[in-house]
Image (cartoon, rainbow, N blue to C red; front, side):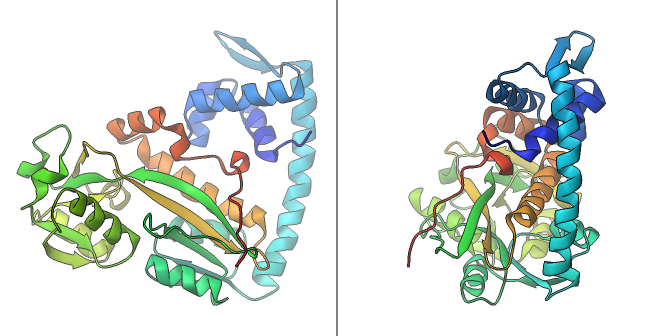
Length: 323
């Protein structure tokens, strides 16, 4: 059978921490999700890897064998990634990353691994077009639900996460006086909208379904939206962590009719190894989960929707299409 190296690493971390709770905190993951991963690993191997007790967990003899093998595998993988880093980064051309999403955590992670980078910020559609034309190697974008991206054979694509769109506003605004928000009630609200891209398209299409097109009082990039919300001049539909990611304490309210943003990583297979894609996706997911624990209502939503932040190593690859 094929073993995922991520699963082996999870077992190693649990053994080091001595409990699922501490391991989950270290990984920025939920304890139930971590437990399910180990249960699947045990089922795949046909052996119990951990002795579970109220005081914690410890490796069985089989678990010790697996962890020893894991350390060897990750040592070899480290050597491989170093070689790849020299090929894609220091020893070759810079990795060209184009993004509509904030790439800061990805940039920090890749630079720490020694990669040379060329960073470009473009709207979602333009970013994907640049990648398809060979002007970028990797893209981090929000997928347009009206016009789904269909990767060609030389292009890989995977989910980073799916995030719900919630009402976001300064504390005290009347639109936040309810537990959940009807889009119809926001017909005459002072809207703050993204200047372009899939996020703008999603918001406008949602409002059209509610019978109107939002009339914005402010349009701009993320910094403009943040400034408008902080000034209390209007409301926006953003992910629940939009304010927290910028150290802003905005009020968020879920929509009565749930709407999701599908954030994806797309890459050129001839330029970017899948191991590097895993690094990028993992960095974004871990940052997201680390922020999510500070937002109890959203953390509860994530617990009910574990598929929203899938683990890269267990994700079914999206099929390419000819064209």
